[in-house]
Length: 452
Image (cartoon, rainbow, N blue to C red):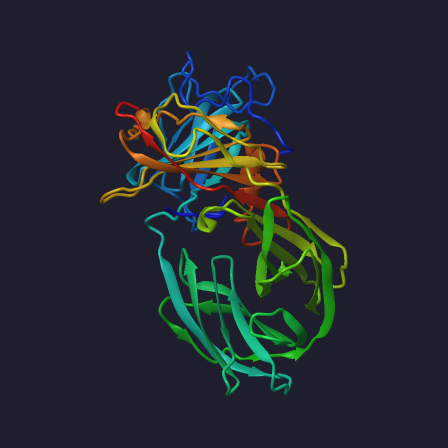
């Protein structure tokens, strides 16, 4: 069983004010007119039709070329994307549902209630053609403070990968970097010298900072002589409060430096955070800070299967004393009960709403011999659904099969349109200028019927 936070590299990777399910339910089988019922919001469909154009990207950012698109209704058939991952479907009445199917991997994503004419969609799971590359970068550090109790950490950061390491006794460093997509990769090296009271405590003082731009790494190569000069840095503070819902406990807080909106460099984590905080941070010109806060359900019978919450707060500046982070209760499964039997395409699934967000529900085959697990992901603002009938795509629901299902809440967005727009900017868990929050429910299981 796999537990993931949205992201949709996913996810992460996996995004409304609190809402309930729409009238009539968020059913997953075609209605009498051959349409998958769309996301309910109280709006009458626009009678005019549109042409929907878009492209599908793999998690690496490259074009996804082995997927099919289906916008159910009006007798439409699936269309295959072209070599650039692009597609076009005409005669569509919004709001509409859209299915992205990777039939070779037995995986599909269903977007409910879209109205966009043009959109870019990203696959949640890493495509089978993506390759992880690795290289090593080495160099020397100069300008460090003579403090015998300090630590100097070096990080390589790019939009497609990262790596970090510590300075050795001789003043040099070596770190391995992993990345996805094309090779070579270009990024920036950042070095921080700091003091802390223990190995797992936030820094108590920053002594130096340096960076080296435009560092290009080739696959399986070692790049040497990447020296970094450190300069003294002024210390400041980052303070505020963290509010978690009743029934949850704060587990972790982390702080990152954002030299640019697209780049976040991890500074430190606190493994014993409290509801109020006042961290020491370095003052770096033009840079801001982001915080990541993690909480999970208290008293869960299985701590490894407990509901959890994650918040990214961005755009914080050195010296701020009133940063406020508020986490929302997780969206949680309601029906059917755990370990339900004889589940079919007419079985209703429901969950509690996620405040200021939409929902991502994932159904995944629990065990699969010699093939990838059958997986269906639904993105919706509603709070109920049935399993979609994907037989038209050659992906009929397996019979007598055990599945897991769980619910993600993703925000702050008020529609699936807005979620698509957010993801078009990149993985919100890896960088950006906007706040982002998500929840992950416990996992439930069910078994499909002999004739689902």
